Length: 244
Image 1: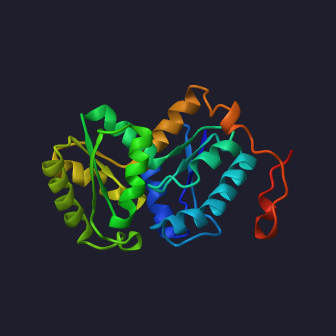
Image 2: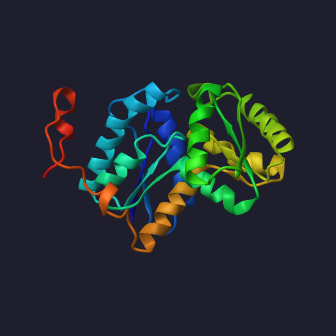
């Protein structure tokens, strides 16, 4: 079973971190392939970044279909391009916010999200309402550390731990969800410090894809997630035309 874990930004070192998190939980016979798109933003911290990350992400899904990938993880907490990827992939596609929030809802009566920049909180809130409904997400807290500054900074762990402890206390939540794929390597240490489940969406999404593939399940191709209708795409998007 080949699972393609797509980092929608173009920072290769982050892809390596994401791939390691996914491989750590993959079962026997599961091959995890972390991939970095050839085009897109260096990090995703705005709606503009998300929009411009989607073409490169979809190109990696299309390549995965040619290479026989069984399923895909979209490793950005905004879950960019998730619906579009489901239209062109035969197997399951799971976003890390989607996976983390569903898992958190199974482990406590409410969860708090600890993310990077405050400007991303609205998107996380929208996704929480979509995935788990109003009330499950008790709060969204930003540590104000840019995505590309998470790696290699020894102050990141204590700062995130302090904010997560504050979130548990003020929100009355039972679980912490890490709101960035670049935080994946903090998960186990945070859980030990805080004494509550801390969820890395990369690991959770990888296991959900693995389970769905094992069950022989993929995205329904009835109605909305059917293949996109064939039509002409112009300019730099010419190569994204879907066969009829």
